[in-house]
Structures are given as structure tokens and as C-alpha cells.
Image 1 (cartoon, rainbow, N blue to C red):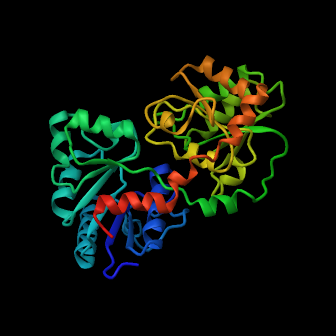
Image 2: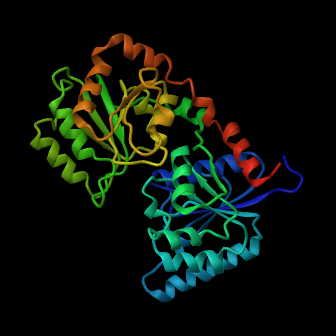
Image 3: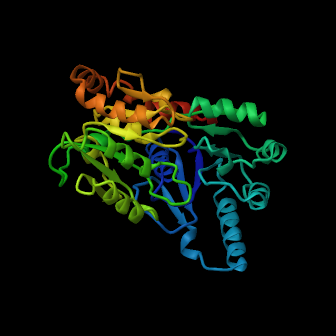
Length: 364
């Protein structure tokens, strides 16, 4: 424990749903457990993840109109001033340029750290290179979740103080929850993520098509999809059109996905792009091999090909189909990948991740 606690404020969209929100919750637990005074601020009133420290829920003050937005800006500014934080760590998407210049220059009155968690940098940095290179000029530093992202941010925007810190895993919780029972019988493979209709980043539609063309239905191996979103009903219709509706199971959002991961033959990831797909590490921590596109960015920093899973040529769905079949038919390969699935889990422990954060923050 520290004599004088370092005070951190983690600001995000919510504590529910997507990977960035989940990682905010995990990092808040990690900081809290290691003696930091930890505060979470969220702008949408949605909470399903366990978190550590205090919570300031701006979503409870939200209504329509510009006056309400201004009111919430003032509430956030006053909260930051009141608590005199040592650092703000920002997990939000930052696509509204004028709003971000205002927030960064007039509300974030203490050292702040933007995190970048997707290879689609326009979520976080203005596409215009000049604006992008200026927006974080006063930041304490920038944290990315993969080495490929770190390189891209440095090269594209000329930022110097960029640090990769891997997403943590609550290994104790994963081990405990992975032993819980589920209602699915028989063999299945699994995929997980938000089913949003705007950008189709997870490409569940293409995954269902690929599954339908594979031998997995013939082998009586189901495809289980975890997640909710605006695209879910369309995906259910699509499974019916491909005549695999009885084999594709939509299990919705699960607060405990680990019980499913641990019982799947393997997890498959078919995304257009990622930042650092925590779901791969979560499956591996459950002892479950993975099959994934070698998309930008993250999978090739997690998967050792034919050691703990299979890396597939990016966006080659025929190759993905072959890999999905091979992970079932090649018994020796599968046994080897399953044996090695948990080899890297300690890299994502709270203890190892906390070491990196302490070094970055110069906090002992």
C-alpha cells in the first residue's frame, strides 16, 4: 500500500457492453486492489460489469438538449476540481473534434491519458493529420493496447510518448466463473461480440455464411454466438436463409461468458479489425484454443500459429472455413493447441499489468 494514494479518474461511456467499457471496469478493479484511490465516471447510465472504486454516473443527469450537455460538462469539471486527481485515464471514443478540444483544454485540468483501443483510429483521433497531431499535445501520454497500434500512432501522428499496456484479465474470476454450468448440450464452437448494424466490424453475417459452407453442421458441431445489438434479428434471419438456424444458437449478452468459452471446442474471431481482442485472451485463459483472422491489430500478438490456435490470412473466408474444419479434424493439432492455451495468461494478470501502469505513471 502507498503512503499517499495516487488518485486516478477513469472516464468512459458506460460500464456495460463493449470491450473498452469492460476494460475500464477491469482496470478500475486492478487500480483499486493495488491501493490507488480510484474513481469511475460514465456518461451513459448502463452498468453490468463489476468495477472498483467510486462511481460518478453522469448518465443519471442526462436529458435532451444543448443546455443539458453544458450542465453535464460543468458537473464533470467540478467533480475533477473537487477531487484533485493525479491522472485522468480516458476510455471514450473521441470522434467529435470540437467537443474534444473543449473537453481536453477546459475540463481535463489535470494530467490526462487518452487510450486507443481500435485500429480504426478515427474513433479516437481526427482523420486530418494536422488536427490529429495537435489534439493530444498536452497529454501526459497515450496508451495503446497493442504494439501495432503504438507503431501506427507514432508513425501517423508523430506522437512520442506512446506506451503499449496490455489489457488485464481477472484470472481468479475467470477460473471461478468458467466452472459454472450452461444450458447447451453437445459440441460447439463460439464467437462473441456486439451485434451492431452500423459497421459490422465483427462480421457475424460472414461467419454464419462460412459456418454454413463448412463441414461443422454435418459433424453436428453448433455455432454459438454471444452478444446483443441492433443487427441480431437480421443475423437470426440469415441463419435461417442458410438453413443452419437449428445449429446457430444466439445466446445474447452473457455476464459470464467464461462458462461458455471453457466448454467450447474453440473460439473463432472474424473481425474486420480490432485493437487488442481481449476475447481471444479470455478464451485462452479458459483453456480453449482460438481461430482468428490475422487482422489489424492484436491477433498475431496473441496467437502462436499452430501452438495455441490458428492465424488465418486476413479476410480470406475460404481459409477461415478450412481452419475451422482443421481445428476439429486434426486431433493432434487440437490437442497441442489446447495444451498450450494458457501459456501466456500471466502476461495479463492484474499484477503484471499493474507493474506497467505504475512504471508509466511513475507511481510506486
